[in-house]
Image 1: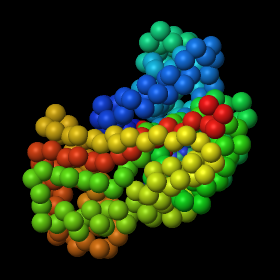
Image 2 (image 1 turned 45 degrees about the vertical axis):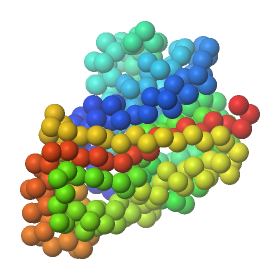
Image 3 (image 1 turned 135 degrees about the horizontal axis):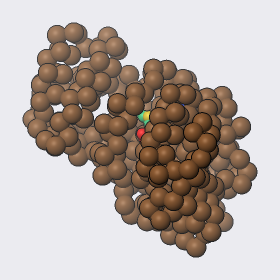
Image 4 (image 1 turned 90 degrees about the horizontal axis):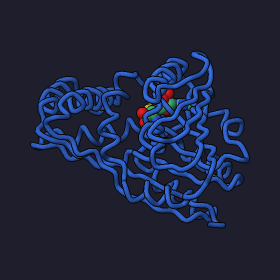
Length: 281
Ligand SMILES: C[S@@+](CC[C@H](N)C(=O)[O-])C[C@H]1O[C@@H](n2cnc3c(N)ncnc32)[C@H](O)[C@@H]1O
């Protein structure tokens, strides 16, 4: 699949943090309240934005394992986290820090999750988490993933799964056609087989419920306005390009839509957060 740039991940980090559902995060924190140590795996960690948002809400000494297939993003994650937590540690290896009053240890693992899943999730992991990741994977991979997690009894928490809902203001005559093409592009192969795209949250909910988990979901839309101008423009570019790649939108329409959208007053982009607690709890 095509890679994710650090520029794009940096651009979206603040909007992502604003969008995360606070009640679900609090429910996760309650679940682990009183724990002295936690083993946490962040799948598709990118530059580590998920840990920067979540670490403050989790108790105890936190042992994070950051997993990504992109070595450049893992290097960026190490640099960002070292700076975030004024970390000590081997500049090429693990990091150790006290950040936001939490003791945080991070190891970095380069792995292709499409094939290495069972080597990544370990029997004593407490929490499997991910942000902005699950719309990339296929329905078949989700089924395998849920089986693997359920076999360990770990908690599952993921945020910012794209759900296909978009409202741009003011409206544009090509909105429906562009969004239909974009959603089709989302279902292309992102390295895991044809992607679940905006069905990913529903599939996860169903599979974890079938595995006996208690599943909680909440909307976490981006609500973008004038101060998010750079993100709106980048989103307009990416959406128009993806829509164009499907062949469903002609070049003139894509160009016209992109130009109008880069100057949109506001946009709401739908996401879902999800917490699945294992049966014994
Ligand atoms: C949209 S980014 C999200 C990054 C980060 N979680 C965040 O919230 O900023 C998706 C991430 O999944 C990673 N990824 C995509 N395919 C992967 C694969 N096959 N194995 C491991 N990581 C993968 C990408 O490298 C990227 O870091």
